[in-house]
Image (cartoon, rainbow, N blue to C red; front, side, top):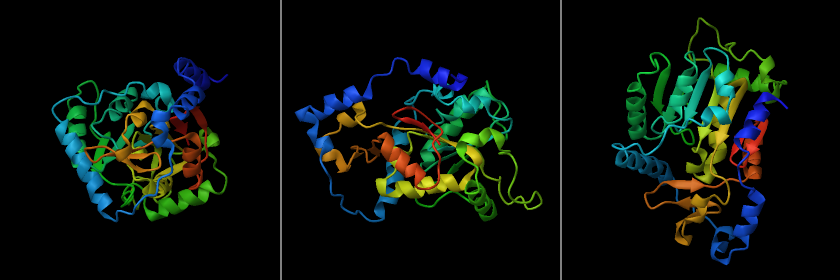
Length: 299
């Protein structure tokens, strides 16, 4: 057994059996409304603005308290972030208040982290928290920017059209994710003289972010991730799993789609099964490397 698989198995040794939970939920009459088909009504382009505004208000309400705790478990779930090459570039999508960024920056002093969020309130909070941590040096290592990757895509300074075209060509010429250790993921695709972008990223972390994106915009969001990830790079994904307790607490009136819900504050949440994640990722070109649990998948 590889060290990575041993760590993962040891870490998740106390996880519950998902099949048992599924049977329990599906046999409970009071929860049947979660399983019913849903005909979604098109709400138009207003969703784009409303989603960002909802998260702005959310982070503004929680700006004075530590609503999120630091995700120290992250390096156990994704040891690739600890064993990566020096000066690897990580993009944290949906960074929130920086609870994911902090452990990544602490783990390796050479890692460069780019963090984006659709909420300006979240970005301000993240910068405050990270700059207040005296145990790490963030100068030239932490770069935050506002971005809704599901609507506008990622900026060209992350990866220019030349790089994106080169990444796509290399991916389809035989650079599968499972062979990433054999690929020089630090080799730039555009000329050093040009320096029009940072040359893409080695890792993308998508931690409890995709579920907040409307279901119909998820393919665009994942396509954007694929376009800026270097050949051999990894998308590290963790999100809500089907029949999570958070899902079961939603009332029937909060359903806005199949497995999709809207909270009273306007923020939304979708709940994934493994097949839905696999279909979404493989459709744009990702190759599955390791699945540890229902809501943790590496591509």
